[in-house]
Amino acid sequence: MAHQQSPALLPVQQTVTVSNFSRSPTRCFQDGTVAVTKRGKTIGYLLSPALLERGLALLAETEDPAALKEKMGLSDAWLQNVSSKPYP
Image (cartoon, rainbow, N blue to C red):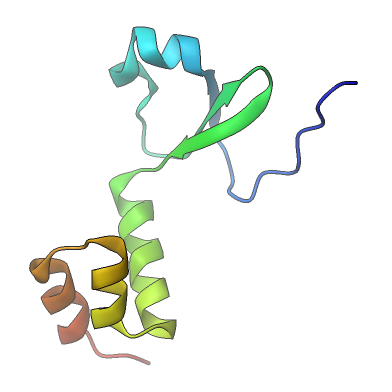
């Protein structure tokens, strides 16, 4: 029975196997999203810093930023930065 890959949740600019990633991880980082696969199945994503920061900011708009900081182990600087931005 073959594994079927479910549709990607993120727009992926590049796909790399875990073997290629482990051989040369720095070559895999770019400004977009990279899917890391093993035997044809996505096992993780590499996100650009801008995309990760934007995602965390959007999440902070729907959840309590202080609780989010605790759950995700984010820094006090992140909390201060998010808390100082005006919400729409």
